[in-house]
Picture 1: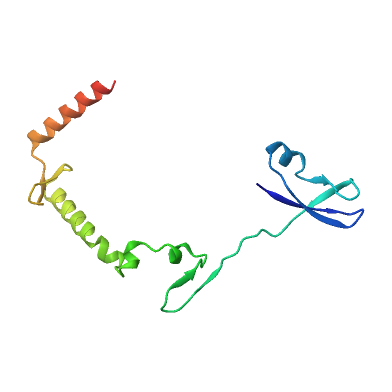
Picture 2: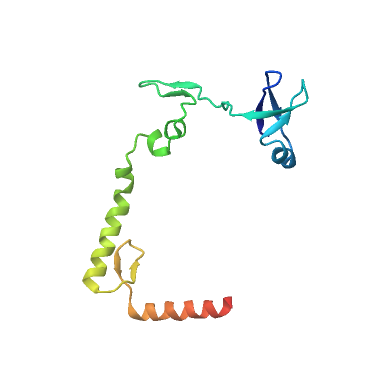
Length: 141
């Protein structure tokens, strides 16, 4: 629920109003009746109530809410002190091996067999896959 601040120039009063309904927000967006003199008071820009509590400390970590998402909610990699490079090294090696097989065979279709070896897909299997995909597309329609 939004809370707006208003200032009445006639009686020099500042007040807040919490508006629950969208119709009220639309109606009182720029001005609101003053609770003292009942004249229209203009809305003023107010500070929003948002703060970070806690502190970032040296080697002992973060206490409370530092306001830095990366520090307050570390990934598992950070929690176990694992670098992203180490995490993605296996992916990069596999990607390089796939590209090497594609360049050597001239085929975009690759297969990783049950032993984990990357190889070009057999043309007969490619044809079978294409037929299966075409049949699945017909069934979906």
